[in-house]
Length: 127
View 1 (cartoon, rainbow, N blue to C red):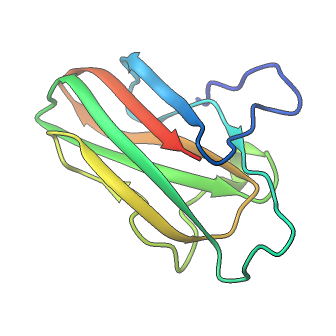
View 2: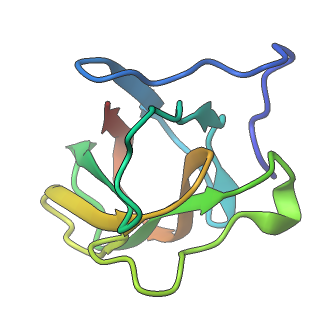
């Protein structure tokens, strides 16, 4: 179940911004974070954008899989890992810093696809 906010349009992530998809929370397997808009810029290259994201835990889980999902339209069913994008999933229980490249989307969110144990999940998306 996504944590959609009531704000329309949703918060946007601009260069230099840090968006907290999860902030020291305890999401269950299958839970998605709130969504964030990715602004478009004039002269933006056709090969997609780069999104930096970081995952950390207050207490490390024994197993975890977290995805960075994107969508062209802010519709729950459209969020997925885009074809051709890299570094969109992490399974490191000690946390991770990733640079997703080749992302072509208007919206982004984090989704915990599985988690066993642990606490204090934090996912930061860097604009």
